[in-house]
Image (cartoon, rainbow, N blue to C red; front, side):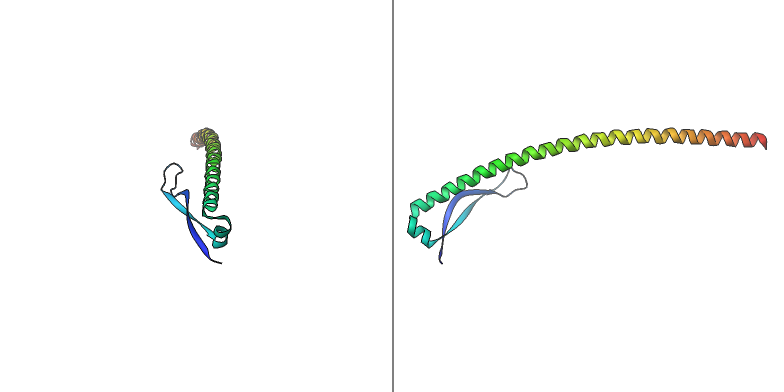
Length: 116
């Protein structure tokens, strides 16, 4: 089977962020038989249509991912706030118990000194 390389009008984002990227053309590989049966115009139209479908799915997935990541960020911020409040409460309890421990220890030492 012989393959023909036909340029397609599709871009791929090559960047860690969605909004900034370098567009790169993608090349579709179709067999020579497809071109012979359908003709170059029909195959090129098919490739264009597939690229449009691909672009729409990419946009849909990008929007879905952005929404999901926004929800995740909000949930993480909520959990972070709850943890900070819990840590603050634990710190206050620790200070309270340390104060009671040292007051009790000081009272015991003073009592022992007066007895001795």
